[in-house]
Length: 185
Image (cartoon, rainbow, N blue to C red):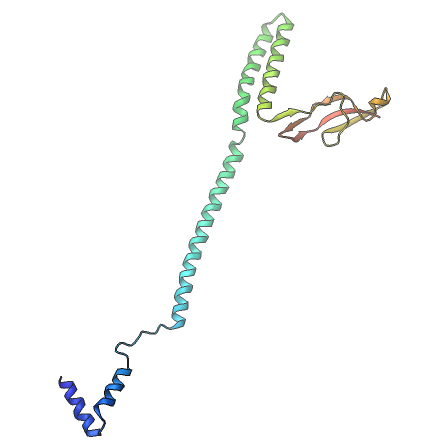
């Protein structure tokens, strides 16, 4: 109240009506809004974005390291399934060798080795390996490798496979070894 009395006295001295002063006071805001400097706002946003970027870079680096470790693991132990499947054949081969040393009947040994070979081919087929058929087939550059050409005994045998010197194989329809063949010309 004392403050209002002093203001009234000053207004009277200057001959300013009290109503004008109240209007002027009303026009001024009671609380001044804190105006944020746009430069400070931009700098704060930049700092926040830098922080986010650093997190994303670290996250990506961890992802890259993890995938590299997984690839190395696959390369190092990728053949484990195949090797585990082939080990019983190895056991059979060792038993066959022991029997060959003692055997007097060659036909029994041959039969045992044939069984082992069938078992081995069965395992390979389960893993997706198939032999490339060559007997009586047309020569195909995508499947066969011609190591020799012989005159064809008949006109029908021209450009056909006459003999296979090394079997070829496919793994899931991809040639992993071409058949080496003799072709009629």
